[in-house]
Image (cartoon, rainbow, N blue to C red; front, side, top):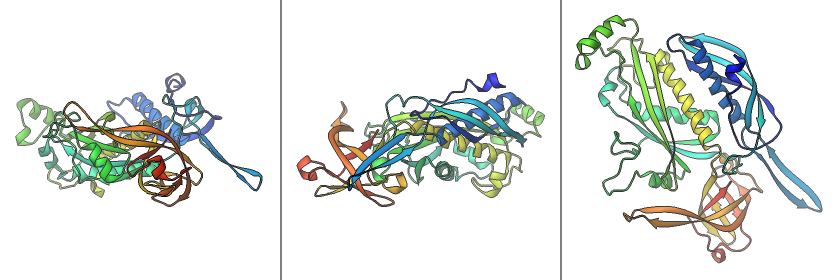
Length: 396
């Protein structure tokens, strides 16, 4: 077991002393392969432990009446070693375990980022590729309720600040997502959605398959499937396949994508109108499988964005003050420093507008913080430096 687990290395952001972290993980057992489930559950727990220890050492010093005051926040990230499974249990074909791991911090992220701010994420609606599949169990609300559940899972993790925008749809053509184009020839409207929501990243997805593994219903029946359905009549399996896409909200660029492919038992009557997200749904084995997938999505999203820079919009300028659309809820504190970047629009060969951020070589220091916004001061007036609304600040 030790030989199986110790190679699981999660590379993260900065160096500090190792920390002993406890974390939980879960995995679905397929084909009675407990070792495989244990490996995947341990992998998830290590990712959770690494995120708990994740970030950096950041310090800001101030001189007050001749005395140096240092405000230091310490968080660590690195590799997991000496992983020990403290407890393990199996219930309803789901293996749950608790580990203890020594998170030894090593180096920074490849791009040098080391900030501890909670990045804002807007989660759009998730379209169902084959709507007829929602008939079984009356899951017609899955396109909006599933991403709402993902928002809850992300916020419970606490590493991202997720907002629900499930009324918005990203893909006009589900088959070709995420590379589908709009009628004007441009790619998806992610940059516009990011700007409207005021978020740094946009998460969207396509629910590829929630159909039965062995279809029993008349419109799905074939001689082979009828035989397989009879042979498996006590094991009503239903698929859950989802593609998750994470975009930069400023440029609209796709930066990460994941596929989740699971199977669960639909252990209720075929005519039972369960509805997605109901108490009855989460009580089904299939609901537990979906819940586990949502946990994996929230962890993967947090892990993906952990090493990305923090970006906030400037929504107002006043003298040498600038106002940012992120505040205490994002982890910003008085005395924090950011770099100002100017926003430009450039046009590609199809004359579609693209956003470009250029370093203005201007620093700003935060002087006031409110829950949803912060005020920073420049060395001179914003108009002299040509700092304007819709420019941004970045912390690496």
